[in-house]
Length: 197
Image 1: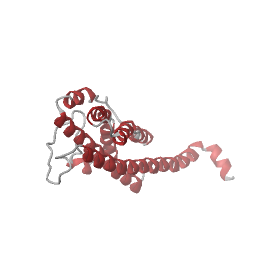
Image 2: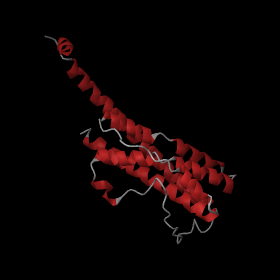
Image 3: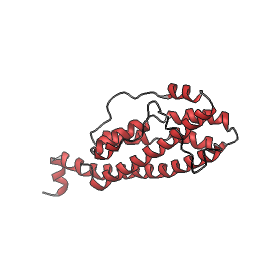
Image 4: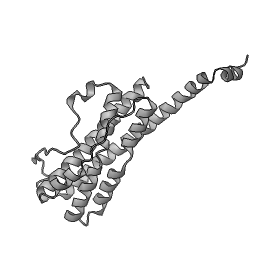
């Protein structure tokens, strides 16, 4: 019996073999996107700081760590979780990216001539890494569960409080965006290295 005939008798064997390269390609593609966006987020944060004026660019400046509704920094325990659970947390954090649009709107008022920053904030708010991670989790059989929080209204209220708090909030959101992208890139890298186990 030829290999081709064997595949006709057992279609499951052929589909599982062809699924693994597709899944690995999807992981590589998502990891590459995360890597690219991490570099982009570093540039965004640098440009944001540069345009806020003093004291933001000063080395001694230590801004207050304002809480951001719907988005927190990755917990120290994040690294100890299984990779699928870390990716779920990554996807949930990346789903909070409408906050970047709130920052963009406030920056449009404060720095209307900073067109490159405004474009970067708009692009960052629309990036699709969260959806790509969710699609990858679904392909792995570990789909994200639970509703998404919509943090935009709370962030809008915080940014309307005044110029300095709005700038600090923007700095915090841009910093958290970079942290979560970096964390997602690392988590995808571990998944890529370990395979879809």
